[in-house]
Every structure is written in C-alpha cells, then in structure tokens.
Amino acid sequence: MKTILVTGGTGYIGSHTVVELQKAGYKVIIVDNLSNSSIQIVDQIEKVSGIRPDFFQLDLSEEEKTIAFIKEHTEISGVIHFAAYKAVGESVQFPLKYYRNNFFSLINLITAFEGRKVDFVFSSSCTVYGQPDILPVTEAAPVKKAESPYGNTKQIAEEILAETATANSNYNFIALRYFNPVGAHDTALIGELPIGIPQNLVPFITQSAIGKRGPITVFGNDYDTPDGSCIRDYIHVVDLAKAHLAALQRMEEGHMDAKYEVFNVGTGKGSTVLEVIGAFEKSTGVKLNYQIGPRRAGDIEKVWGDVTKSEAGLNWKAELGLEDMMRSAWAWEQYVKENPLV
Image (tube, rainbow, N blue to C red; front, side, top):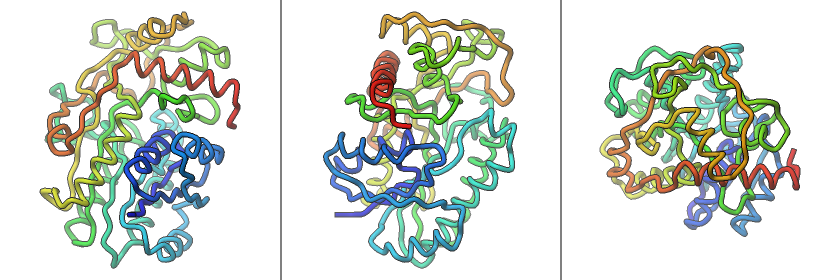
C-alpha cells in the first residue's frame, strides 16, 4: 500500500481528495496547520470512508519542522499539495501574508524531499491565465501578469516546479490548474467549511440561504457577459478530487511526457454568477436574497477551460453538473447547521 502525503488535507478540496485516495487503496497522511479548517474534518473523513487518515498539525512554512517531518516519514511516495492561502480579495489586501505562506510552504516541502524520488501533484489555478485572449483557454495559452497576489503565487510556484524538475530528475510534478470548485460529498459529511465570512460565492450563497449571512452581493453586472456578471467554470469538488487521483496515477504508471506537466481541471463550460444563483434556486427550491454591488478588485471578467488535454492525458472527465453542485452544497450547509464543526 502506497503512502500519500496530503497537505491541507482537512481543507475543502483536500478532504475530498483524501476520501478518493482511500477508496483507491492508498494510505493517507494529512498535514495541516488548521488555519482555515477544523480538526473535526478528520472524524468526518472517517465517517465517509470508514478509514481514519493519520493527521499531524504542522505549519509547512516552518522549515526545520517540515524537513524533520519528511525525514521521519520515509514511507511517503507521493504528495498532493493543497496547503496555501487562496482568497483573491484577501490577497489584494494582504499580499505579504500570501507570498510568505504560499512560497515558504512549497519551497520547504520540496527541499525536504531532496535526495528522494517523489511524485508531486500541485494545486494550481486558472488565475495563471489572467484574462485570456481566447476562450476556452488551453494549457498552451500565455501566462499573463497576475490580477492578484494570490494569482501571482500560483504563477511563480509553477515556475519553481518547472525549474526544479529540470534541475533534479528525482521529482515528477503535475500542476492542476483548477477552475472553480463547488459542491460537497454526496453523503453531506464533508464540504466547504470557511472560517469567518466566506470569500467564495457558493458558501456565501448557502450561508445566506440558511440565515447565517445577509444578502448576497454580486460584484458587478456591467461585464461583457450575457447577464453582466462574471463567468467562471464551476466544477464539482468530487470530480476535482478524482482528477488528483488520476494525476498521481499518471506519474506512478510512467505515462508522463515530461518531468513537469500542467492540466486544466474544469468542465469546459462557463456559467455566470447569476446563473449559479438561478441553479441554486432551481435545484433546492430556496429563493435567494441578492443585490448588485460594484466590481471587486482582482476579479477576472470571464474564464473557462478547454479540458481536452486533461480528458486524454489523465483519462478523467468531470461528470457532475451545476445543479448537482448546488444541491450537494445546500445539503452540506444543512448538515453543518445541525452538526456544528467549528
């Protein structure tokens, strides 16, 4: 049984990926500093899969502790690295917070594996494309100047991976450029659990619907889109989790064309913010209270991905639709209300 380290494994995407790894027969070690997640998610993962992952509370931006941890765990053959700050708006306000955490944790982790062979899946983002000239955007599209410090951390992180792969043949890297993960596990036992005010659209929608938040603000209705609101490629988090498993297996089976590869992970279809609101109302029967606000700094007008490469290279395809995403996110919000986790 192979052992995979999942950093940020009590987080939203991380917890769903842990479940998929366990289903596929891997032993999982989670490392998380719990800065934006709850230790109770380890219990929830066990409820879903019947298997309790090993958990260690560790801040990967602390170099000596990170190196010591990896040296101790010689059984780790692969890493899926989620641990990073991820809110666009917050990164505009606190850029140094994002640069310090996202770079130090990545560099320390890679350094800790020096001299060992390791397969490494990196959590990247479609923000590396900026506002693309052509849609849908392919992996061959130019990486543009980032619109936010968060986006810049992903761009530079990808450069770090590419250059490390060139310099050191022990590493295999796949960067998955996510579009917008939403939804929850169909058991409603794990899902997105933001601490404080949600920075992403769907958890704010569900918290507003359940009465935890006030009206939803749609940031701008004057973009060049069908209804004036921003367009994103929303992907169900379970589909996204399965893409990480597929990327890991591509490396393990020796199918890589290079030591560093990138893949878009989305549905290949864009939806506006107002369409997401409509899908929530249709799939749940719950009416939402929303208002139009000014544009938000750092937001891209429209982006969705060409997923031809990931479907072929990863033998993977997103299967769940927007209403599935909204329905599962609402079921999770209702579960959390009855079973508080933070």
